[in-house]
Amino acid sequence: MPQALERAEGCWSWVVLLACLVAQGLTLGFPTCIGIFFTELQHEFQASNSETSWFPSIQTAMLHAGGPLCSILVGRFGCRATMMLGGALASLGMVASSFCRTLSQLYLTAGFITGLGMCFSFQSSITAMGLYFTRWRVLANALASAGVSLGIMLWPLLSRYLLEDLGWRGTFLIFGGVLLHGCVCGAILRPGAILRPVATSVAPKIREDLPPPSKRPTRGFLVACGQAIQRHLAFDILLHNAGYRVYTLGVVWMIMGFPLPHVFLVPYATRHGVDEHRAALLISIIGFSNIFLRPMAGLVAGRQDFASHRKYLFSLATLLNGLTNLVCTVSADFRVLVGYCLVYSVSMSGIGALLFQVLMDIVPMDRFPSALGLFTILESISILISPPLAGLLLDTTNNFSYVFYMSSFFLVSAALFMSGSFCALRKKERQSRQVQAEGAVTEAAPEGTLTVEDTDSSEKRLHTEIMYVTSV
Image: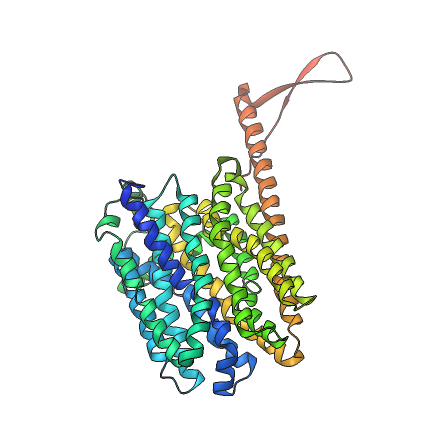
């Protein structure tokens, strides 16, 4: 498993940061522009809201679900080759999608292939950031996530401009060329950099924990499969790490509502009479605001004072994000929507800056790739279900307000669940430490005895006390 580099945070680390910033702008920023093509694709293929919603949901789900496969490729070939492969796949999928004649073909090309390529580029960049940075890791993650903000700002503007002149097919063809720059970002990573681990003592420890090889071939194969699953999907961490379990479940529930404004905000604005150019500008406003807000959120979260409170800051950002979506249920006036986008950007920047940093705080860095793989697979299930479910709700009610009510419900409930669960775990941990401390004092007494004052007489008597110490 790749470890932190010997010369982490050198000059080349900041060049890698720039490459990861561009890679995240090309990948995570891209799905936000799909709303620009929503109505166009719906008319082209004569599809319902729910059927059209499957396209962005498949693409975004694959962007997250390919995590374990990306982890295997990173472990075998390194971040450099994996990121370059991702750029090639993302480009190939978008070029092929420009020739699609049915919506199901679009699901395969722009949805599955492009989404998988984006996953390889994005997740290998996240792993590379963890390898190249140690002391400034929080700030580096926040700066890299600013690339997402640049993508959110530029992709909708480029989409609207190209859509008018070239149509959606010509636009997707151009997008294929743009996404090919992910190969350039991958080439910037040094070929042999991740092969020089610092913590060489980790590998023997892992080998000692593995069961001895079996003489029977069948059992040996099952053991090998179990080891591979444990290495690339952190089910053991999910079972034994309560913090990881709470955080994963909370984020999976949160994702049911988080991507909905990115998909339905532009159709919602155009449905209520907002010009198409101004509607596309709404997504760009969110992206432009995040360029400044995400690094600020990273600086705040990176302070030592907030190190133990990052998960609570993430819960607070999720809560504010959910409450902000209720603004869209009140009015669809363009000025109101601009105010909504500005306020929404504040909470979104907190979520973007802290999402993976909190995960790094909860699990050890040597297990981070496998923990990220399982985390993103579970996350992708929600991403796959959420937009079609919202589209079905829209087809049934023909009212966009219910979509934003749905988004708010999932975000607010997830924030309350995570904050409450983390507080309960912290309280339980304190009680466990107190019990262990009392047990240590008890064991220090000679022969396990304590002198206790008897209230019935002035004579001191010896009482034997048995202390049971439990650990969480």
